[in-house]
Amino acid sequence: EKRPVTVLGLGDMGSALAGALLAAGHPVTVWNRTATKAAPLVAKGAVAAETPAAAIAANELVIMCLLEDRSVRAVLGAAEEALPGKVVVNLTNGTPRQARELEEWVSARGASFLDGGIMAIPPMIGGPGSFVFYSGSREVFDAHRAAFDVFGESLHVGEDPGFAALHDLALLSGMYGMNVGVLQAFALVRSAGISAVEFAPLLNRWLTSMSGFIERSAEQIDSGEYGKDVVSNLGMQTAAFGNFPRAGADQGVSFELLAPLQALMERGVAEGHGAEELISLIELLKK
Ligand code: NDP
Image (cartoon, rainbow, N blue to C red; front, side):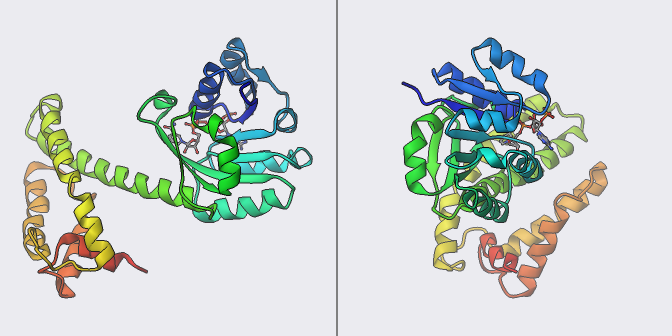
């Protein structure tokens, strides 16, 4: 017997989550502010509820996937009376503080709470590459894990309800940082009329080989030793970095995306870190 699940929010992601649960044989109740978005799921066997309160009342396990914290608050705030005894799992993107505050609010209304961060785009849900962070009570996580595993690999990252959002934002930081580089790389080659499609495999190859050094950087961060066995010192990298704005000016490509990193690198050199690896700049990011 598959556990019945309620899904609140049927945007691109919420619809993918509900669809995966249906495909795995779970009875699913859905609700969405714009009711028409429930139709494709109802056609696959879901039950559409008229209100968030009715959707929550239908099942013990309630999964939320809305735009942001404000919409989560609005939806739960309008359904308070249905919350006692429920297990609310918020898979909406948010901050650690939002998750901790929501956990307090939900607990005060007699429900259990887990926060989550989805590391997949909708077509990946239920497939091999997808994983989802969860934080909050390990016991609650274990009790409902079978349903979570439908979305992808389920990773419990801490009892602190803020930890899923923290891990999510950290991985997204890596993604957006990569995208900054990808944008700049394509802008440079396109400025010379080179085909992006022809260039893409080279970019992919380079990013893949560079990502292989993440573990080495992590060891340096945990040990605090940035000056041992240095292979690409910050002083050298800062000197070379000046070629980005120079080449950009010649080629007609803006330097705005990389300028903040250049400023941080120059500060690192000025503060005496020129002989260390670039990853030592993490010390300058502490506020
Ligand atoms: P969509 O923009 O497709 O959907 C947003 C959903 O939020 C809709 O169901 C919308 O309802 C609802 N909503 C917005 N404001 C309110 C409100 N005030 N009250 C009630 N409902 C509201 O976004 P996604 O489905 O793509 O994303 C949902 C969450 O999943 C986000 O937090 C996102 O960051 C996260 N996520 C998304 C990924 C993706 O690639 N799509 C990847 C990983 C995480 P309505 O239909 O009525 O507008």
